[in-house]
Structures are given as C-alpha cells and as structure tokens.
Length: 109
Length: 123
Image 1 (cartoon, rainbow over the protein chains, first blue to last red):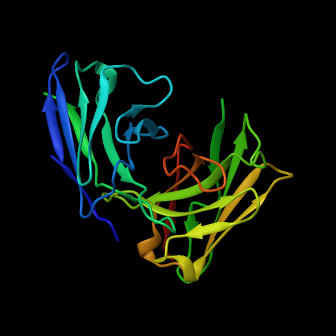
Image 2: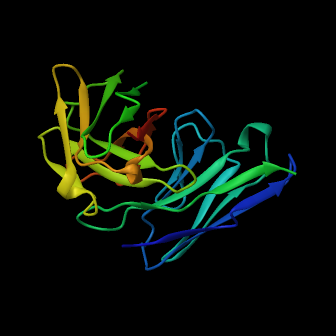
Image 3: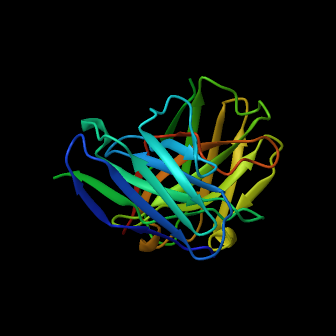
C-alpha cells in the first residue's frame, strides 16, 4: 500500500499570509496526486488533480507542485474561507487502491 | 451541478450488515462517464477509499474490505449503494459517496462528494 504522509499536522497562519502544505508518498506516484479541502459538515472539495491542475472554479491562489514522492500545496494569500483541513490523495495504482494523507489542519493564528 | 446525498441507518449492531445509499441528482449515474465511489473516515483518522462502481456494473474494491463488501447501483432510482457485512466497532466512521470522472478507466480523483453520514457500530 502506498502511504501518504502530510506535514505539518496543524499549520497556524494569519489571513493574507502564504501557506505551504506538504505531502509525501512512500513510493513514487508520478503526478497522480490530488488535493482536497474539507470544512466541518461540508462535502470535501477537489482543489487540484494531476499534482498541479486546478479543478473547475478553484481560485488561482491555490497552486500545486511536485512529482514522484514529494508534493506541495501552496495558498498564496489566505482568505478567511481557506481555513479548513486539507488532504492529499494518490491514484497511481492499478487495480485502484487510492490512499489519502492524514490531513493538515489550517487554522487562524 | 451534480449533488450526492448519503442515507441509511446511523446505528448498526456488531456482526450485522451496514447498508448505505447515495442518491445522485443533477446527473445520471448511467451516463458512462463516471465511476461512483465510497470513502470513509473514522473519527480522528484519515480518509479510506472503500471502492467504486461503473455504469456497466464493474466494481473495484479496497482489498482490505473486499471480503465483506458489495457496491451496487440502481440506475432506475439514480442511486448506488454500499453493503458491508460482519461489522465491528472499527467500521464506525463517517461514510462519503463521491464521483470519479474519467470514463471506463477512471481518472483517480474525486470531483464531487456528498456531505457524509455517520454510522456507529454498537450494541
């Protein structure tokens, strides 16, 4: 099983600041990686797929990078609505056995 | 815009079968363009992919759950369902249904999710 490890577990930042979230895979997943935003009581929201492609309607302040085993989600200027939990997910295996990271909670400093 | 909504019992007894349904609106599950998936999240833990079903009825399951798992679809009701047998407390989780684009092979990412439903396994 491909294990996804996210860091940090919690990130405290101020509105307007830049946030950098990391995701590491236990083996190469090429660029087969997605990022999701999850707020309590809401459906998770797809932000990024293919490591760096923004999903429909996602603001440009969200950007993804990386390949292989190391990935980063950057939020360039945090808005109040961005404080949430963020998950990475790999989809590199066949037959599929998708795995997620444990999440990074982005909280207001 | 597609919407997904999970429904089913919130409490299941140990050793019994957990059954959930996902109702899809704003799009047809028989369109042939998507897989329809289940994911769960135990309290305080990460997300776990459970499995998926395609329009044709083809399924893929998480190997760790496969022996207890059935995912099926009812195209007449525009719903798909999850049945997990012989449940234990370890199956207590919030269960989500989601849509995976990409046609017959599936893209891998999940572009629409339900809000989730909590299922507790307890006597």
